[in-house]
Length: 317
Image (cartoon, rainbow, N blue to C red; front, side):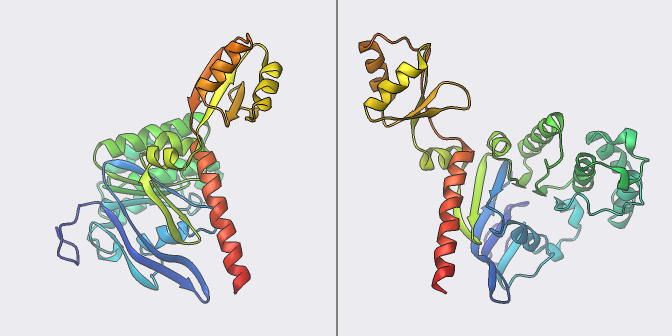
């Protein structure tokens, strides 16, 4: 298969090229270029108003770009011969007629897209909805609606999944189920493009990250490289004499604060220096672990810089 450029195109690959969308004098997406490849979960990050939802709508043909292109397997969504068999999507879990049952909703989608009827029962079972398939959707909780949205996305057994906040409303078991499912689909060679504000879960699920701010690309890299490149190294330290240890470290110019996992998070002194200092002062240490920032910490700092940039640009207008 070849794209418009004549170069080979990977089936299932999502490509944005100089993608731009303007609404009047507001630019929601500003010259975005990225590729989402099969065989991995790609996380899509950005603060509210960054242009994530608009980008997903452009890929799915729900909005038309002002300029640039968004394609799946080298084709615009409208050009796909069997859209649900190529791309499964979940953008709005509550966007279902409340008077229909879960089974009726899926059966209608299957009939309209020439999808075998047995797929309805397959996805109901996969998403844990078989027992409530005869209930009207208006009585569903947000978590159940998310599961129904996932069932609809998987109905055509697609090679590409585009999901916007799929874990909203799910309990811990449901979140783990989504994580396992997405990883298994990627391992089968499918393309998984996932937007979420839940950073801790994204860190466990995604292999690759695309980060945008103010409609522009901020990062397109692996999860590991994103964290290691943008994080500040620090050291986790625990001692049976925590206050004495803190005073000692601060006297040497280190920044010390409580870590969510217990103990102190220390910036400004590396593990070797802390260990030598504790030994010289006769302090016992129960932990001395070099560490990097979490995805949440790195992302928060990066998106803050983007927000500050936007504020400065607006002030110049």
